[in-house]
Image (cartoon, rainbow, N blue to C red; front, side):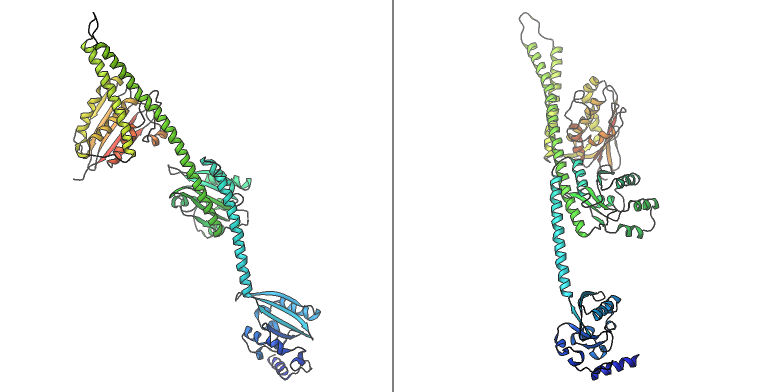
Length: 565
């Protein structure tokens, strides 16, 4: 075979056709080979069976081989990309029919593109090869830019629609529900919004599905495997860390996972999730929730562009949620203010009315009466005591209002001194003897040993007075227990009543400003006493807690740090 090829090359060099004819230069092929050598494309002149009888310098450079090594070989033996049967079939068809052919080829090994042309001339087939890699890359770049522009236009239109929808309401859950339905089916087959709760649980505030059967499966999965904040991946992790989680090929990730809960894996596989994006809803540095986009049956695959779109959507949703929250808080603040003003006016008016009546009675008793007997000193003394009590009540109310102003403005100043909490308690408790008697409460005091610390005397008196007043108000007719003790690191004070108690849902609001867990018609006060107590205790680096159950009374425990010896 080698000798046959060598003989063929020798014949071509001497101008003899292997079939017995004579061809020299253009006369042998019937083509102007000198002109073909100047063509900027790679050119090969082949016999009808594909054997090369002439190649130009461009083809030599393309194949990186000299002409002598190329002549006498079939065209498809010169380059791996030309060995395919489809190329040979095109060549034979041109050789037989004389119809020219033009097509593109991609050399994947070197990532280069070529335009190939075949045409028949004078019992030969001329092969032209021109590289178009630069044009292809430019075309791909332009196509990518066009696709990116179209994607940006779609994303901008979607975000504009989302902004309009999100701005249509300030109601929290309604915003989230509209958000979920907006994303399906444009962005996802299913979309959910989950919120972290103060008790550490996760609440699913909104859910939307593209298909009813997916909805049933999703709800069943959520019931079996609820989201938790301590989950190592998924919604719980995003809520905990505030970092986006993007899985472009969930099936591959699931297949690569070893071990774990087999039941959970099977349930996830049954959902058929292919890809997902979970983005946090963050406003002013706070994670408000997590937006989840899922694809299951659709063939859509998420990309980084989809992640950016989801994050843009989440930012708009978080802003809308924050605006809704601020609006709700403002409305609640207005309602609380109106309620407070109503209660305050009632609380201030009650002692003022009583004070006015007692002063008028005193004035009548002190005026001389013609032929009448003057009022007894006991009667006058009783009215004076009543006046003092009402003045004290007014003074206490005004002091609470001033304390609110000082604390809110950050002007609560402490004047610390060396102080015995037990001695202070023994001093303050007798001041409530009259109030205890009117309420029918027996007070049991246990404040034996010293409980020394560096605290503010007047503010601790205020703490004790507010706690005792609260116990008398809500423990009417029942005994009250006051205890004081000290440990190495802290001193403590407890005030226990046996009254109505506090329901569990009310404890979170107990120390808030203007909060009242009972009706003001039956229990007076501005709803500020316990809030002021907590602010004072916090200012002294202490803490206050409550132990209570409905119908079993309440115990308020104050712990104050002591200086180390």
